[in-house]
Length: 203
Image (cartoon, rainbow, N blue to C red; front, side):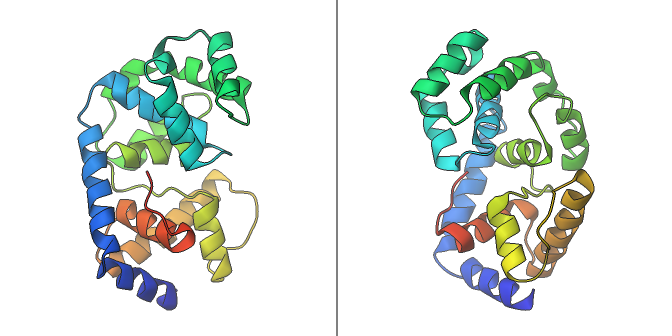
């Protein structure tokens, strides 16, 4: 763990820091935008599950307001046209999520309590809910995706296996410890770890 934290600390003291800080500012700004814009970000998080962040972001841009308006069958057709791996399932989850639009405005300030509420939305697991919260300004939940899992596994910090909610929380506590030791928060730590694994600072 110490070697990994040394590498993160090095990034925190170099040019990557400004990229991370700009992304954090972007997230904070998005959290204050309209319900519709935040729903678009929720749809992005649904789209990235078992897909790619770049692909999800591209499809989000291409869809624009269609993500709020297209009937399920039409949305599935569009997702297929745009190259999503699971157009039918993701269209279904996005349409189901529209039923919970008011929920987006009433989330608690505490990230873990907010995540519990979001888990009522079909298609949102711990990772997707955490991703949405981080991207809309929350800094106290971890996004335990395959990149983070692989990075931690390569360093012997976690074992491979099914990511149950209990295992997710266990890894989140590990990341929370690392963030505290580094004097940062979970939102920033995720971006630094993502950069270590991919060489990119994405959303």
